[in-house]
Length: 157
Image (tube, rainbow, N blue to C red; front, side, top):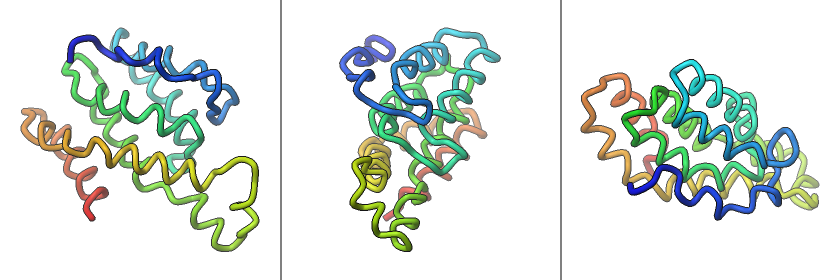
């Protein structure tokens, strides 16, 4: 990777929504994860989780756009919370809140906000980078390897 988070500015964050409204704060949180000390990185990741995977299972419109950056962070040795990044990716991959609710309330499928579509798009974004897991399984950090195994299991077809 030449530059950390190099495509961050290519995403139209102002046009995307997260759980707080506008997703314009997401780039700052991602940057804080890479440039801060451990406490700063962990706090930024916790705030990011609230914005893109609230409660650990409710994704939003900006989630899919954020996923490639999470995969990048998971591969950077200087990121102190890589295990938690993988756990967030697993939560996104497992998210089916809107899909399961739409079964009981099909009117959700006809709303202007396409929650079910956002959820599916976020899961596809996680799957699109799953080849990265193999590199993570070769890491010396056992906790990271375990988190990578759990994510791989969640992504198994």
